[in-house]
Image (cartoon, rainbow, N blue to C red; front, side, top):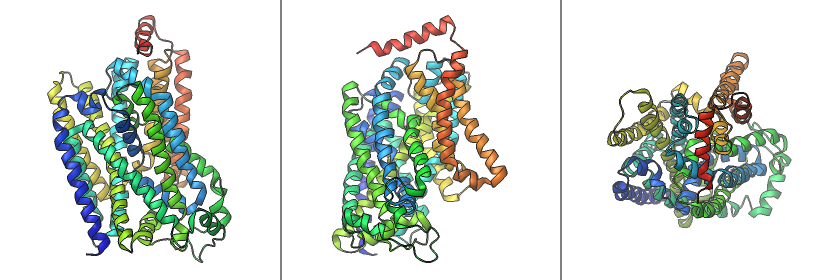
Length: 518
């Protein structure tokens, strides 16, 4: 066993014990469904802010997005991190956090489908939303597994990727099934601290590499960069130093919009606002979460932009998904201090992945246990049975995500490409307009959800028939952005022609009284 492997195993062991201990200690605080799903609506600013940030950024961001876009685009890729922090985090907190907390508390809504049912007085909308969450978020969690597995395989080349996926699944299942949302809020806080320390250390280490030469050296050396003969992704120095992404400007804009505005309609992100304690916590959380996202997002893409210099222009054997793992091994693989930092970074990426996975799994499990099953069965489900079912489904979804990730099931792999944009495209219009306008109708809400499905589904079918499915998957960011935009337009437009009846209008007026409280 090499020194990097030994240090990493020790760090992982300490981390695993800590996560399991949190699950055991918080189990007694999650005896009701309200506490298990949203922490009794009593989560403070730091835990909520870090929970939002750690759910936002998983190992997929570092290994997939930062590696791929940093390698292909260069310095301009940092705009994705800036967009995520300003649009995906700051604006989301400023516009939606307080209204979401107040309205979901008034409606006693604990999930996104639950919010749709009670805001629009529609059980059918609740069922449809629950099905969309189940179908598209479980595959998304599989992508989280794959991203982390690829990274650990670079440090432990003799260990199969599925072993690391299994370790992550087991750890997540232990504390999530035991402690629910309260456990995740504590673990998110710890994971967030690890992520901040790790990213700052990694940025300093990468910029200090002899091939990079600090920030000034990065820009100068990238400007002089020339691709090697036979490079499958050839580029120029002007492209890599283009402040707005050079020839990749359009691609960059769509990715900023998808990964930033997408959070406005994702149930695992919006769910953080259900649980926050009060308005004061929201004000503090807005600042904390934004700073967190700036450090993590910009740091990840900055690291990715150095990759061609660190790796001497040689794309790793595993392609763009192996760029960040190779950078880590090159920068931190030698020397005691570097090895210690490598161990910290590996725990950082495990933390990022587990925090995202726990949020997605809890969202998916609650969609079935709390929203779908009670809506379709005639007998009322007892609270204690709902709690047990939610715990069982959390475990089942962790297992399903693990199996899907290891088997590379074609339909699951395909769904991953569309999950983020499609789910947000379906929910963003009904969710946001439902918070801000009394005039939005049930038919308008349905139109928003269905428009998201039809936009992505119709575009996918058309492109697949003309250019093949791989071409459709490559266009998934554009599809997601279009779905979100159309949903935001369709919801108020349809509502304009389908006004609420008097009884429904009075019910909605009473709901909006929640904003006058406090």
